[in-house]
Length: 81
Image (cartoon, rainbow, N blue to C red; front, side, top):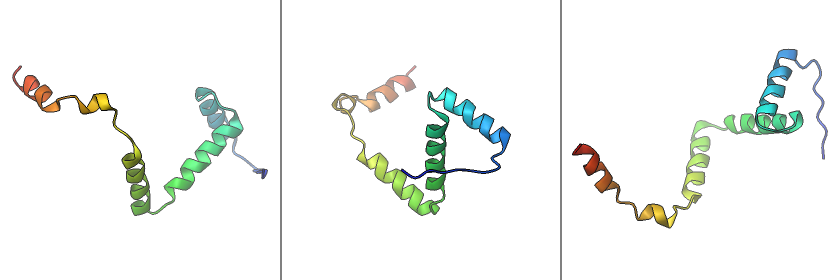
């Protein structure tokens, strides 16, 4: 696995990274990887980023129990209050 070393890393950024890692129950190295991956995804052109998000949403499956819910009935009941 490749090794990454960063020189002259700002102390305030390191403290923030350490804080976020603790919040997410991750090591500092794991948190850095997650943040770098997220940052690299944001560098995609906006139309590619949107396509990626839409593809991910389209891959989700709706539980059968949710398909049985009558949302129109809920809206009508709410409007009648």
